[in-house]
Structure formats: C-alpha cells, structure tokens
Image (cartoon, rainbow, N blue to C red; front, side, top):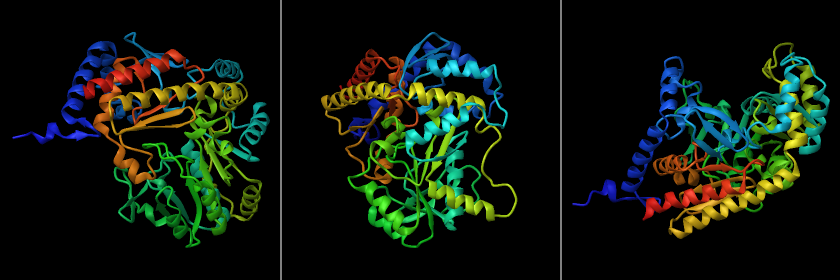
Length: 459
C-alpha cells in the first residue's frame, strides 16, 4: 500500500522531502548556534512566550538567533555566523541597518534630548519634506503604522459622519481591530486567532476581494462607508498586484460614493522615493507610511489632502471638549523627527532607489530561473525593491488566492535551509528586500542558495 501522507505533492514537491529537509536543516541550525540556544533559554522565563515580542517565535528555526550586530545588509549572531539580511526587520530597516546619516542624526539629537512633547527644529523641515515627497499638504506623526492607520480612520469617520470602513480580503494594516475581517465564502467574519476579541468586527467593516470592482461598487452603494483602506499592492500575504485599471476605478468609485481613500504604503514604499502612490499617480485622500520612514527608529506618518484637513478642522471646532482618541505621548518626539529628516534627505534618494531596483530585478530573475530549471509551478513577483517567490502559479488576483497559495511547511523548510546557507528572508512569508547597502555578491549568494535548496527538494 502506498503511504499517501509521504508520497503526496505540495506545490510540486514531495511532502516527504519537505519534512526531511526541515528536520535536517533544523538540526544543523541548532548544532551551529549553542550560544544563541543558551541565551534564548536563559531569558525565556521572564518573557511572555519566551521572547520580548511574541512575533519572534514565528521564525521557522528551532530558536531565534541572538543578534550581536546588524550593519548595512548583514546580521552577525553571537555564535559568529554572518547572515546576508534580506528580511531587514520586515521592512523596518529597508534602507539597511543604521544608515550613516541617520546614525549621525541620532547621536546629535541624543545629546539634545530624546522626547519633550514640544516641536524641535526639525519639525518644520520634515513637514515640508513629506509634502514635497508624497504630494499631500497636511501631516501628523505617530509611532507605528497601526497608530497612523487608526487615527486616519478616525478622521475619515469624523468628516464623513459614517461608521463603516471597507477592507480587502487578506489585507494587513497593523493591528487595527476593524481590519481583522475576512470573507468566508461570501460572508464577512472575524479573522480567526484574534486574542481576547469579544466583538463582531463585521458590524462596522465591509470586506470584498482585491481587484473585484463589481463587489467594491456594490459595497459602496450603501452610502455608509467612511473610507476604503488599502495597500496599492497586497503584500502581507503572497503578493497580489492590482489588475490594469483597478486603481483608477477604485478612485472613481470612492469619489462617487463620497468615501475617502486611504492608501497604506508601509510596505510598498519599496516602489520608489514617493512610494507606489507617486510612481503610479494615485490620488489618496489619506496616506500612511510606517516602519522605514525613520530608518528603524519607531515612527510613522499620516497625511491628508487640504480638503480633508479643512473638513476635519470644522469638525474639531464643533465637537465637545474631551480627548480625541488620537495621539500618544512619544509621537513626534525630537529623535523621530531627526531620524526622519536624515532618512528623507539623505537615504530615501533617487540614486539609492535606482540601485535597489537593479539588484531587485536581478534577484527576481535569478529566483525565477531557479524555479523554471526545476519545473516547479511557482512564480516570482516584485514591487520595486521588494521581491517574493510564491509556491503557486501566478499571478494571483485576490486574497483568497493568496491564502491558498501559502504553503507553511514548505516555506518554513526553505527558510531554515537558506539561513544555514547564510541568507535570511522574512519569516512570515517569502518576502525579500534589497537595500541600498545590499551588495551584488549578496544577491548572487541568495540566488545560488535558493537554487541549491530547490535542488535538494526536487532531485
């Protein structure tokens, strides 16, 4: 009798080979990192889930390597292993670890004070830089993209007088509660796994598939949606690109319905200096950028059109006195603004993006060639400096397809094997970023390592 549990194929790869590779590579990883193993175990008793952030458990290795130093596009762990870093803090360090202009600005500001809840000298400059770079005239600073999205949605509800928002199935916008809704068949439901969630989040959220214009128009026809919140490209999943004309129709439909359009560029800033919005001429009412805007210093920004700002000012004058529910004490502190100024002026430059584009194109081509050489039914997708291999045919058109394309066991085995070959990619999916600090030889090492791993899976 054939054992179907081991003979079946997962995305064109025998399941038994996936299991064997994962077991072998996990053992090699653990054996090579005794100091990290001890250090993680020592600290586990004091941290919920054993680590200072429970997301750190999502790495597929037996335990997280303990970092001694991160510089440029390379991480060195306490066992002396050097990893070419293509995760880059899951976009937080998209421009490399500690870019020299930002490190200099941090040192300078550290001598002047870290937080004051008052504007510093960089405030006016950063505001002007944001307006020039992204094309929206009015801005606020927050500490995370979650905060920025949450505050922008409050403004949208305030100025429209509407309670509902609309999201695309499979989206991710940080830990904004009402975005944790998904489609189950044709019905909107809370996404599974939410800790301590006691509400029906679908009460104030509509959800449709990305690229589905008829469904979008039907959802907006109720005239109760304050804002559509979306990434220009769905990224925190197997990446989904917009189909031709999607963004033009989305903008037209939201305007017709009196609904604001919020573009979240936290990941798609990989596209270019002005993000996907500037590169493709999008026209959002509200705009959010988190993670890399201060090159790793926790910070985010959210901007709006002059019209939205004026409507909110009128609302603000008329509302009862009391807490707005927007803002945190550490937001817009001098350290954030110093780091943002250095990032915008000296790091997020056209020259750096041009270099990132060339290397990312080479990475995508190399990964694609390795996949084709093994006859696997996979594809590679790229948005500027952001590259991802997907263990399914493509292109994908919506969140449901992206969910079906995700192969956790196969991807985890590949990730551990790549780490053992000196290449680190993001743990949550198959995302890779090229930074201004990334070297051509690092890209070639990743392509070679990927080909080697696929060879072991398909030999």
